Image (cartoon, rainbow, N blue to C red; front, top):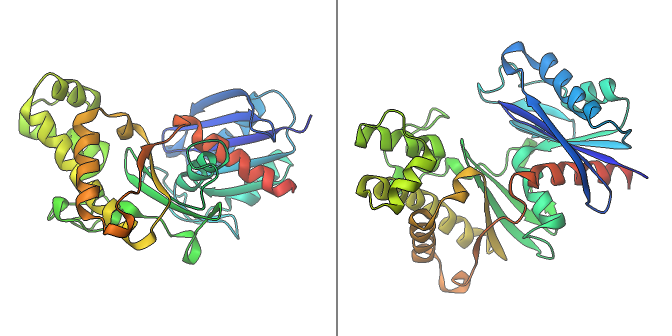
Length: 300
């Protein structure tokens, strides 16, 4: 049987899955990403994860953090979560280690491809997908293909300026971007500061909101509003069939989802007012499925 490996490289974890060309996930594994040891160690870990699947594969697809040039297979740039990752020949060096064809793309793009192949985006022509977790990433699928933009840099939805984040510092170095208020760390930090709760986590904030904590509800509403403002503008621009949200923050409860949808609706033009905003169907496996889909495309 022809088998594919899908690999998801993040700043803290590298996951791999064994997947058939029809989308059946047979096995998965994960290990810590040795980010501090540099790109060679990260590539070794990715190869080791594939080897741990225990069966030969015909191709490997990779979704990686960073801006990835899908044509050259190189990492154009990356955050400090993967020191030195920028400039790495991800495709070439991993193919040399594994001795099989390798296809690469950004991890959010892989997430979107997974949802298109087997999840919520299946059968749709134009889809906007955002992942909301440590940061806010985005992808536009048109005709089932990723819109990469110049050099693979399209999709940075978290860096749209929005009123709800006005003045807040963003990890990119700018201010007032959606990610500055809408990411998981941003909301967690806001709650810790406002409530004086240094150990609070985002799940804590969601639980406290359910229990009636007004600070927790305010923090979730502010983050959701910032994201909703960005989504509303993007939907007006793109007129997608639907919007899909993934990432850890999307598992929040109604005190996040309700103000998010309300804010999106308040910004939509009449022609796109019915655009659905939905949670993804594949959860954390979406990027693994999408990476395997990239690998499958190499074989076609």
